[in-house]
Amino acid sequence: MGNYMDALGYLYTPEAANWLTNLYGKREGVLVSQTDRYRRLGKRHMELFGEKNLYFCSAPGRTEIAGNHTDHNGGRVLAAAVNLDTVAAVSPNETNVVTLYSEGYARPFVVDLSDLSVHEDEKETTNSLIRGVAARMKELGYKIGGFDACVTSTVFKGSGLSSSAAFEVLLVAILDGLYNNMTIEPKLRAKISQYAENVYFGKPSGLMDQMASSVGGLVTIDFRRPDAEVEALQYDFAAQGYALCVVHTEGDHGNLTNEYAAIPQEMKQVAAFFGGKVLRDVLPEQVEEGVAQLKGKVSDRAILRALHFYDENRRVANLVEALKKDDLFGFFEQIIASGDSSWKLLQNIYVAGSPDQGLALALEMSHRMLAGKGAWRIHGGGFAGTILTFVPQDMLSAYKRRMDSIFGDHACAVLDIRPCGAVFMPVKA
Image 1 (cartoon, rainbow, N blue to C red):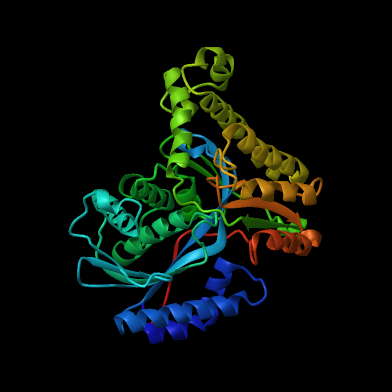
Image 2: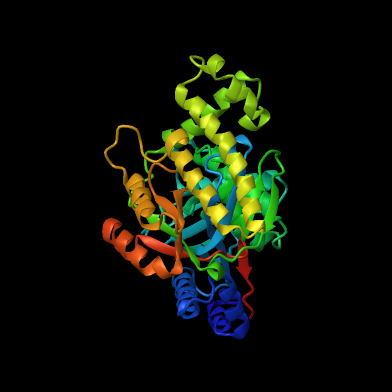
C-alpha cells in the first residue's frame, strides 16, 4: 500500500515487472505498455481524488473454448482467463459511498452502500452491479465499505470476452482486498458476481464467465452441483504452433437480453417435462427417446436446444481428454463440431429474421481459410459479438489481414491464456 508516488516508483521495480509479465505475457512491448497503462491510471486517480493510499486490482476477461450455453443447466465447460483485463486504481475512503470513474464515461458512478436494496430503476446499469456485489458480500458476513476508483479495460463491451463478468469479479476483489484481506476464495467470488448480475442487474446468466475470470488459467468446470467442480489444465497452444484468436464482428449485444434468457428458459422447460429443474437432472436418453412426447408440449427449438446441451456436455469431456493426450487434431474436430451444434441446434449465431449475420459470415470465412488446418466456433453468448479460432502461426498474419479487411481494423485479436484470476498488486510504500 502507498500513495501515487509510491505506486509509481514500485511499477518500475523488478518485482512489479515480474507481476505484470505473469498477467500479460512476454510478447514484445507488452511490459512497457502495461507499465505505462498502470502509471496513467494511477495518475488519473490522484488527479480526481488526491493523494491517498493506492492499490491496483485486475480481473481478466475470459474465453469460452467449449460448453456453449450449458453452465446454466448444470453442464460442463472448458474456458480460460485471458490477458485482456479490467483494472482499477482504488483507495478506501471513510464514507459508505462508492465513487467509480470508468474510462469512456464523463460522469462517475456513485452508490451509497447504506442502501443495499434492489432498485428496479437501476436494472442493467453499473450502479446495480456495485450495489449487488456489496449486498451479497454483506449478507454472507463479509465487511464492505466505500472506495474511490478509476477503472480502465481492454475487455471491451461486446467483445465476447465477458466484460461484465470481469467488472463484477473486479468489484468483489476490490471490496475483498480493501476490507477482508483477500480472504474470499475464487469460486465464492464468482458466485457473488453472478448473484449481482442475476438479481440486481437483471440478467439470468450462468456462472461460467465469472468462474473463469475469478479462478484464472485454463479450466474445465462441471456445474452439476452448486459447489462447481473446477479442474485446472495445462496446455500450451503456442508451443504447438497455434494462436488463439477472437474476431469481433461489430455486432451489438444491446437489446439481446430476451434472446439470451430464452435459451436457459427453453432448456428448463424440457427438463421440467421430465421432472427436473435443469437438464443435468435428466438423462440424455430420456430426452432423445422422448421427443415424440415433447413435441407440442414445448417448442421444437427447445427440443433442439436440449439436444445441443447433451451433445456439448459429451464434447467437453472429449476435449479435455484430447488435451490430456496431446491429441490436438482430435481437439480441433470437437471444437468445429461444437460450433456446428451452436449454429444448427442451439441457434445462437444470429437473431431470427435479421439480415445482420456477421457471426455467420466470420465462421464461414474462417472455414474457407482454415479447413484442415485449424478450428473455429461461436464465442460466448452469441447472436452478436465474436467467434473463436485456432490459427496456425504461419497463417496468422494472412488470417488477421483477411478478418480485419472484412470486419474493420483490429477486429482480430490474438490472445494469451492468463494463469491467474483476480489479483491485487502489492504496491509497497
